[in-house]
Image 1 (cartoon, rainbow, N blue to C red):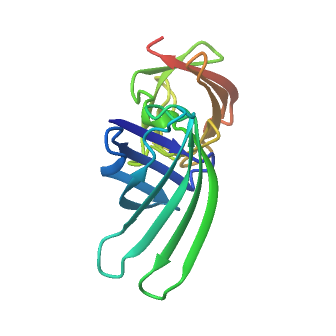
Image 2 (image 1 turned 180 degrees about the horizontal axis):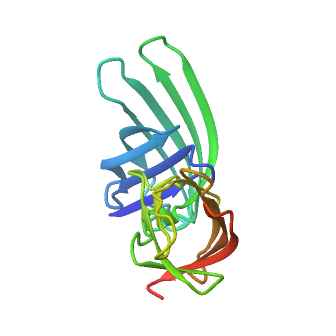
Image 3 (image 1 turned 45 degrees about the vertical axis):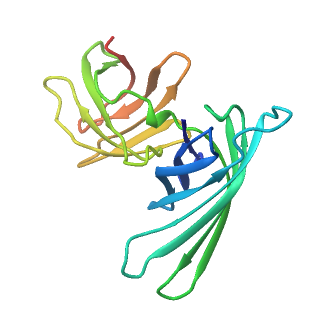
Length: 211
């Protein structure tokens, strides 16, 4: 049994699928998030190929809760080992029971860092040498749109900020003129970026786990 946790770069599509190699089932708990809506899904995948090909086909389907559920079906090609896909090409169709409207979307999914990234213990160092903390609270689907809490160093105005995370770049904003951004480097496991606080001070910052 393996778990596929992948998402598109813009967060439009994300999947967390429980895939059973022994029988080819995609079983509960398995979820697809499409445009922020969660669908509980089941399906099938080609668990093994006679020539040990490094790719597999799959299909899944599910719906939201009643009343007026939304229905979703998806299929695609997974590339990489069944235990840890390296990418997925997916086609998604959503249908509404309320008005019979449909939406279709195709995308490329890649392993989702947000599912495995530790949320706490980030120590932030500003360019003037003072330190603060950064806490990431993952969205339920692990897509790149978490909420972050930014605790400024002692003596600076406190702030809880709403943030977005797209293509490994974390951006936040809050009350007053607080805002900033930082880029996640999975190789070094650090954030680096810039900020502007209520005192209109521009600066740079870095964040690492417990350092």
